[in-house]
Amino acid sequence: MIQCVILPIHLFHLYRKTATLIFINCVTEMHDLTWAIIMLYLIVTLGIGIFSGRSIRNFSHFAVGHRNFTAFIIFCTLSASYIGGGYTIGNAAKVYSHGMIYAFALLGFSLKEILVGTLIAPRMKHYQDCLSVGDMIAKTYGNSPQIFTGIFAVLICAGILGAQINALSTIFHTFFPEINTLIGVLISFFIIIIYCTLGGMKAVVYTDVFQFLILAVGIPILFISGLHKVGGWSTINTSVPTGFLFPFGSAHQIWVLLGLFIAFMFGEILVPPYVQRLFMTNPKSTCRGTVASGILSIPVFIITGLIGLIAYTNNHTLNSNLALPYVIMNLAPPVLKGFLIAALIAIIMSSAAGFLNAAAISFINDIMQPICRSKIFDLNFSQLALLRITKITTFLVGVLAVFFAMGLKNALDILLFSYNLWSPIVLVPLVAAIFGIAGRGAFHYFISALGGFAGAMLWRGFIANVAYLNSATFGILVNLLLFIIMYNFLRPMPKKRVNSNCL
Image 1 (cartoon, one colour):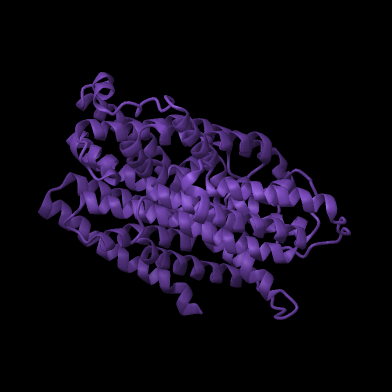
Image 2: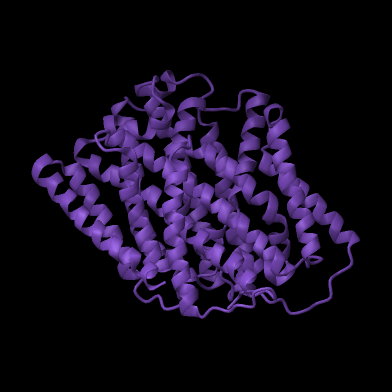
């Protein structure tokens, strides 16, 4: 056990030596300012992560910090988490191929964040002792639904984590063809694994702040310089296909847009990393930070989509997945190229870190602990033991995620598929619990959750190609219908104390 706990520390020292040698080689032999900036960014990120996580003493601190973050910190960490590879590289790629319909559809996510901030965040005062979504579910439906929720929490986090790794591999394949893509991804992702393993949520949050400040400067610079290089808005307007800029010309386009808008609105709603942010401070600060993050996402999605059109205007024969990296390589000022690549890597790393942390917390808190504390095993772990096990789990999940995700395709497509593993299953009973609509126990939860999942899978397998409605959205509707039916026909469960893992 002790060797497993100190393994990340040994690997960190090995990484530090390797990174130092690479940095010196790049500066002294290649004389490449781009490499120097990127390596400096990676080293600073690692330093912030390790330094900020020094005060972690128990499992609760690892999961949600000390619950004293400000509204500005919540704003930064939420923004850095959702502005990931799917919503930047994937968005630009889809706009390059299909036009601004995807960028406009992503505004469904913006609306979702604003609604969560105004409707959900103020009600989180009842859950300030919780560490995960599973804890919230356990309070209303019991321990078995908590385990079930934990399983799908791990799956959704793994899916979105895979999208970030996919985007990271695209970056290294594009910018550094002389380096094996797997090695490049391993070097960058290893940094995430190290500071997530050692510092938990505090490390994630403070590296998020640093990365958010970089991407908040980098994205506008990239857009402005690219727009200038291709000749301005008039050039784009005359170069892209009809309908790319304003996809509202036909009923078909409007229905497609509406279907995607709803999919992005409900797909990531109340996913584990975002819910963890709602536990990390008082409801008032959470509300302000979440609403501000939702408002910021509107120009972010529009700008990254327009970067895809800038790439199309300059070269319409690209692999669409390379649209955003192409703009950096060919249209950005050379002196800023290293900074912009670092900003792009920051976008990926910030999102990946949040989902890696959430996957580990969900596994420990919602799957392992309830099983171990059941009558069959009757095991209880100390806070220190839980902390050690969680660090080992974080490390292993991160390593395995890299190898499983390297063969995946477009990051935005991965996100859309991953949505089937969360919102059709958990969203309806979770929102009902938050708004005080008492469920009828575990049976109620399982019928609606399994029905939602089955509906999403059937829709995806047999109907998706002939309908505008996303499979996840259809699954939510099935879940809602079953929940209402069960709520009206099942007898209320007698009130009793639930043995949840809330601290």
